[in-house]
Image 1 (cartoon, rainbow, N blue to C red):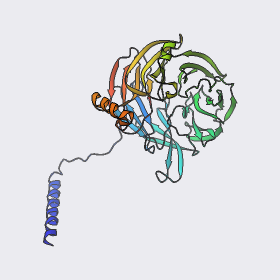
Image 2 (cartoon, helix red, strand yellow; image 1 turned 90 degrees about the vertical axis):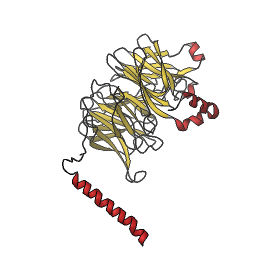
Image 3 (cartoon, rainbow, N blue to C red; image 1 turned 60 degrees about the horizontal axis):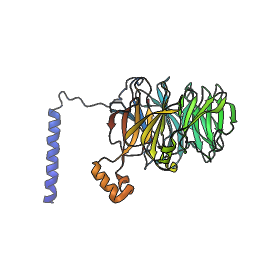
Image 4 (tube, rainbow, N blue to C red; image 1 turned 90 degrees about the horizontal axis):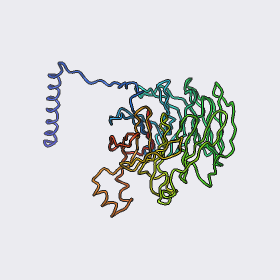
Length: 409
């Protein structure tokens, strides 16, 4: 009993001393209060977003906001297996199609489109949608906004393919439209959208002023997926979407209210480069600079079947002449790229890095191969001058969890 009372007496004495100290220092003490940080207007700031499904957990998707100087400005938590982060400029809002379960990893599933305030990054509203949103490692084309920013389309897969139409202005779910055999959505005007289909054609969907179906029809095949498969992540320049193919061709497909047609096709590599093994790379490996009409393509040396592996260079093409005008050697292996707009554009690369000395990394690779490096890999971001390829800055070790897309705000 005596040995027990000694520590109890000591703790009681300490508690009385701390209480006395708290009373003595009470004068002038102002406790810190929680508050919400308010961002400046994002337009013209050269800010950019990086997001992904936070693998291997996939239950807590993340989107991180960075400034060009490397500052981490904020983040969103976007639920299980998030899709695209969709940005509205006319309303200063962000939209994310999210999935939640009542028991975290199980229970009742609820799919919502969450509306976030662009200044506080706080949720403003939730719009319930059918619990069947498509999930996938590639987020391109899973959620898109109409050009007038009135309607958002969310791709579903059960495995039947359909789209949920959401009126983000009036905060309501409108309807669901079946698009059998098609996926990956591409806006083509205030009310027109296209979805790429398995036969090489496209599904054309037009909405009326209330979000109902005004037109739905299929186009003739524009490419042969058995001969040369188009990769679904594409970059838009005016009314033309630029795709790259598994066999290293660029395709310019014009999509308007009048229909879809092939306008351009050229080889991204010369015969010598093709023989040397150069091919397209990355999960989101294209970007465009609108004012200059340049297409940026992530490339690496590998067989065409490994098109989703990270890239080591970005090749730049003038879309009018269909000629390569620059090659940018990257600081690290990149899985996705983005390009800002404006007079001084920046090239962003989302990279895989090993945060340790190069000699140690080389030794692990020589002794254990890629399997030895994989547990050590982290993601980072590199920024380049998109005009001359100069490396400007590295943003180091990102939080653990797989991120798969980078895009300017």
